[in-house]
Amino acid sequence: MNLWVWLLLACLLGYAWKLLGYLVPASLLRHPRMSRIAGTMTIGLLASLTIVNAVASGQTLAFDARMGALAAAGIALWLRAPFLVVVLAGAGAAAGLRLLGWS
Amino acid sequence: MKLLQSPAVRVGLSISIATGLYGISFGALGVTSGLDFWQTMALSLLLFSGGSQFAFIGVVAGGGSGVAAMGAATLLGMRNGIYGMQLNALLQPRGWRKFAAAHVTIDESTATSTGQTDPDEQRRGFWTAGVGIFVLWNVFTAVGALAGSALGDPKQWGLDGAAVAAFLGLLWPRLKGREPVAIAVVCALATVLAVPFVPGGVPILIAAVVAAVIGWFSHGRSDEGLEPDMDPYAEHHHPGSDPHRHPHRSHPHRSHPHSGGDAK
Image (cartoon, rainbow over all chains, first blue to last red; front, side):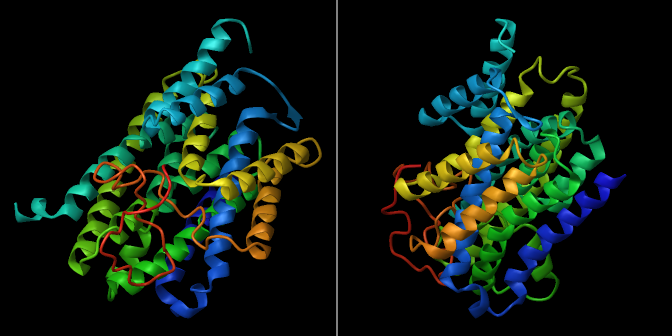
């Protein structure tokens, strides 16, 4: 139940960002520094989410089958594979490495 | 059938199918991260922004709190405000359309619209991609969520690896040139260093602060990182195309909107 509250709040705030662009005077958001921060933060958050999902296990760092998934996804992206193929490559690598006994 | 002859509508439809399909991966990862079917659907219906949605379930899957998940999703949604400002100047929607346009303002609909030069085509491109992706993204989220809950042990299927791949896939198109790569590496390092010392989810917010500080003090491209996950015009022009070079510019009337830029 508690998660629902944060989830709906996230939805509300997400929509608020979008609507803000349409409602506030353009000059406020047109400041180059604003779009610059929106951009660097997008890169930083996605990089952080990638690495957290690859190596974090609660509050400890683990080197497991997910590293194989990261490598496989990197190779797929390097080969310009479409997004869904990249995701499948990551799943396949993690599942495959576990079958081979690497947790 | 005159509409189908519009280049923007055709691009909008193809990007809708490509983007909508990967809603399957979101749906499957949503239910295996600990959300139930309707929580997963609520994110696709109401939050409707791929990066923010993956961020929310990514934090929850990593044992993070609801408030940290909300924080990551919200910070990742900031760029949609920049897109909204740009599209408002471009399309000038009136009345209820403003509110509808805001909801479907995402990377892909913005890129489809700004990649066109004719105002009517910009409008058609935006609405086709926005509404098309919204419908298909939700349909395929439901398919993925139903499939995901039938899978049993998600680790056996490598779904935790799929999440890693999904985030790298979202990050990849934004890594054009040395500077964004440096930002990504610094933020990844900050995250890893923080993991042992703070509760789950917080390392991601620390990385966001680091990235914001870099953005505040450095002087690079002001549209760094503001690229669509999937380039709507990749098929139509050279691989180096990027329709989304200048999100802060209100009227990108360019004779060659897709020339220049780095490889995706």
